[in-house]
Image 1 (cartoon, rainbow, N blue to C red):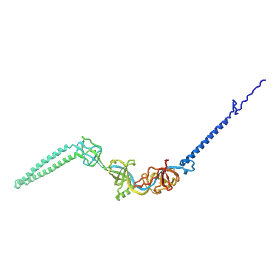
Image 2 (cartoon, one colour):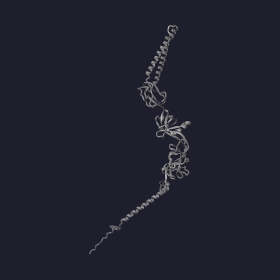
Image 3 (cartoon, rainbow, N blue to C red):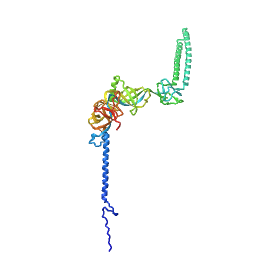
Image 4 (cartoon, rainbow, N blue to C red):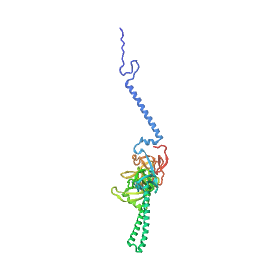
Length: 447
């Protein structure tokens, strides 16, 4: 009887495969994968922390800047821009809008009727008083002059004849040949010729004057505008447009307006004999064009605007000002002396009033209440609150609190004002000594 060999199949999950080799269960293989992943994560974290500790040991400022491991906001270092306060004088300006007005403007017209035969100027040319500008055809007036001269000679001859007859009539009257009436009539005739001769002389003078008017000359010195009439045209003394326009540019005036509240201070200066300087700036109020002086004040205030007009005079030697040009005018009325000057960007305002962030010991920002005495342009003059040379924050205040740590960088623009005495500026990326002054050592890296 043959033996029957039985084959036992391994149960699912056993460690023996079909070929007889051992096989791990599926769940154990997944467990080993997770263990390997965990080991890799632990190794990565350990490597990151080791590298981080090494970099912090080499550059402690990096950890402070990034705020790694900080326990509160006070440990966060804020990058700011700073500037140093200086002691000096700050000018007081009254600012207004104005327009340039030619000192004199003349529309040159012909004083006689006739044909324009010559134009002796170029458009835009500068002329002096008495220079020839144009000529009118003089021939009709030359004929009138000759007629007047001829009439004068005729009347003079007739008068001479009448005078001889008067002398003869006097002898005849004395002899009783003619009556008194005939002698008187002859004397009256001599008088008529005297009047005719005077009239003839006036006609001659008038004709000569018309000939002078045929030569049109410049009444003032100035700059000629565009030509209004070309040669060959018939011009009349009654023409409205004229031949050309001359504007006097040297000197030139600027008319501007100021609020009526500023009138007493300006009037007081003028009464004291003070010559107030006036500066003209361009339309953007950034570039100064020219400097002049205040000439006069209008005699009334404009009720509609509450302003009053002032007139200033500029030499305008470089012709930088042009008639009808719009300018911003700065009138210097006073100078505040011995103020502490800081950039206007440093000023902050809050419920407690006006304050700044000053850099104190260890590069720490401290709130300092200040009193503003004068504001001029981008500079602020303080009467109290700071000392000369103290460092103030001018950019980055929105991230600061009282006592915040800062990383200061010096502003490239320092406070400036008329007659300001310069003060030492802190170097770029400067540390601050305990007395609030810059240490004078700049770091090589700018943050």
